[in-house]
Picture 1 (cartoon, rainbow, N blue to C red):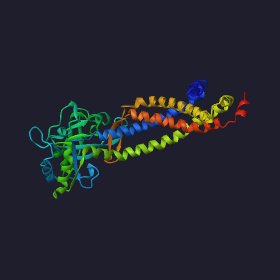
Picture 2: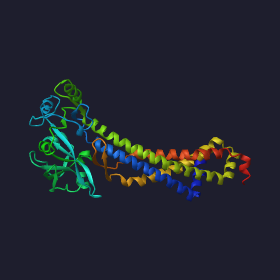
Picture 3: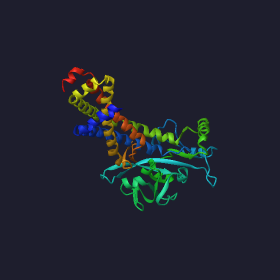
Picture 4: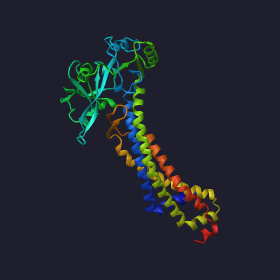
Length: 388
């Protein structure tokens, strides 16, 4: 460690210009790496947080999303009567039959239309999803053309502010409440009475039923009962698992694209680190010869120059993480490939993601410094000392 601390690390200070340029190149790559994965992390967190471990969602067998599912009206009482479904204080089942359709609304940012999900819900939807809280107004009144709007939708799409009238499905609906839900996907949706939305959108029945179970452990028996009932051609899923599946395609696309872009940038950064270290070796041949004459082994020389390259890369990694931090919590949106509707979400930078950025920086430093380090160790002592 004495060699690394007293010689190689000090040499970086002596070569401030080239060291700074290499560190900033790595910093840019790490910043792109962290911000890209922050998009995937935020999108996944938004959908996964929409689910509750105590809830189950019931869809038609084979359906992969709500908008391709169907649940007949006659099947709802059968589901509600199951003993695994929790009851409210009034003894009625906590179940919400739902319909999901897409409408077009203009965005604030560019005035272009976007696919906005509209969810028809039952009168107990907010009891089933206890994490949803109202930040403005009140819950919609069943049997009326009132709607509630998610907080992120209000800030992203035009015409959804409290008190506004919104026209879709040949009807006019009034916004009476704005709700939030721990940045869940529901915050990008518009909610209304399902029994009014079914005829308004010319549908024949529900698309899903979300129920609160008596306990998370009751899901297996709930699933078994539905599977054994010939009248129910339906398949229940844990709500949390359902939304995790919904996020998988888009999250994978973002991560693959981000990895591809970052890999291209990383190659450039590694060549930059390699050039810096080759220049350092060429400039310090006599010093390397002196170290070899003093008894330092080739292995120690390789380790010292490799440590110098990694330390330089880690400095760049720290700078890159600091550059990426301001995007944490910023809102953006993308299309959910499972439902083809727009979902607003926030960039999410976690300690694990920052740790991954630093590890990535160290790997770039190691890859860029390995060949110059080996080259330094192979310089013959006699030739190196002739540089004195």
